[in-house]
Image (tube, rainbow, N blue to C red; front, side):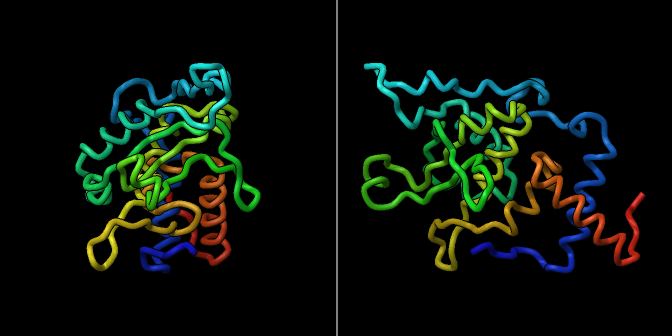
Length: 207
């Protein structure tokens, strides 16, 4: 179940501010990528025919060295919200087919490694990105970085300091909107709904 990690009465203000920043700025808000390059470039997601083993047989996962590079660069910024991820052992993968959940496509996942997986992968978490969905949406480098950031936000610790998974604030995190704006379609819908709600309440929208 999702957890609310911020005062509920602040949610509309935070979401509206994120939407205002993004919509009021040219392009992608003038932000740069942590690994450099053009944030508007379509990201080179692995092709479907790359998901094969040495014998040409289909496989479900590929090593995500490029995903790891983005994640390490994000963690290296020493953003306080990623401090738990900096102490975790994480493996990164491209997933051939991402599937869906509750009628929505799943762009990425962060799994807590346990049992046999933890033993063989020698890690605490596995983060995977869905190659098929990201190809279909022609995801930009900016969107892929935002997705990696989103998955890293899932890593936290419990009251005893043990690594664990953090649930969403909703189907996302306030922090990802404040950092990357409304970077995918369902976040844009949230921004529109919050703005309309404030108008309906007579609160008005910020200039």
